[in-house]
Length: 64
Image (tube, rainbow, N blue to C red; front, side, top):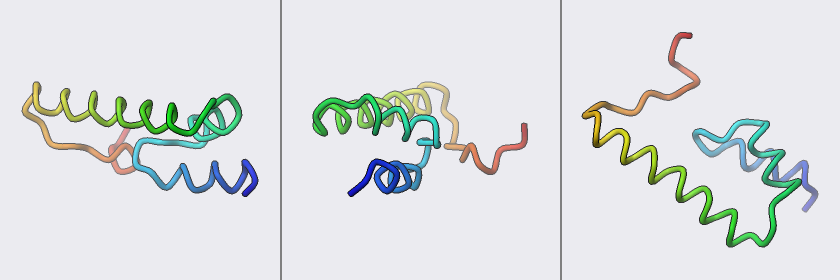
């Protein structure tokens, strides 16, 4: 699998855009570290939602 295919697959994850996917495929060490980093990001998002008592807003549908 090429890095372009991997980056394209990563962009299907909510919250992972083209820049993040490119950075992961370019600079990522072992895959386990990447999995931990993504889990950390999702955990921080969940914690923020719980603290603020808000619902998740998909960045693709939120007006700027």
